[in-house]
Each structure stands twice: as structure tokens, then as C-alpha cells.
Length: 65
Image (cartoon, rainbow, N blue to C red):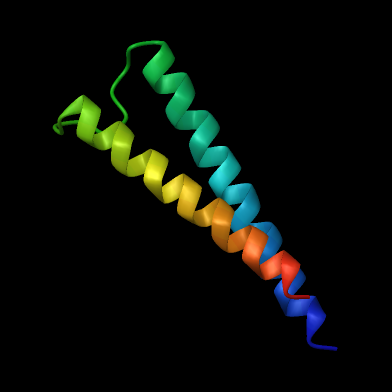
């Protein structure tokens, strides 16, 4: 009964992290800014760290089902 919310949360974190990581990589590869008005290196780094944290949280939720 309690595994349903854990699976849902894990999938949401995993999909968000994967999407953010792909979007950030695409923006950096094309030389476009990740966030307007911010240092390009800093914004790419923060977005990448947030994506990896979301992926780790998703994996953690899915392994504790």
C-alpha cells in the first residue's frame, strides 16, 4: 500500500532530473544560455547539480519501495 506513493515520487524525480539534464546539455552544446542574466558557467553548473540531485532522489525513492 505504501509503495504506490514511493514509486510515483521516484518516477517524478527521475523524469524531472533526466529532462533537466538533457535540456541543460542541449543548451550548453548549442551555446545558448541556461538562464538569462546569469553567468553561463554558473547557471549550467547549478542546473546540472539540481538534475543530478533529482536523479539521486528518484533512485533512492525507487530503491526503498
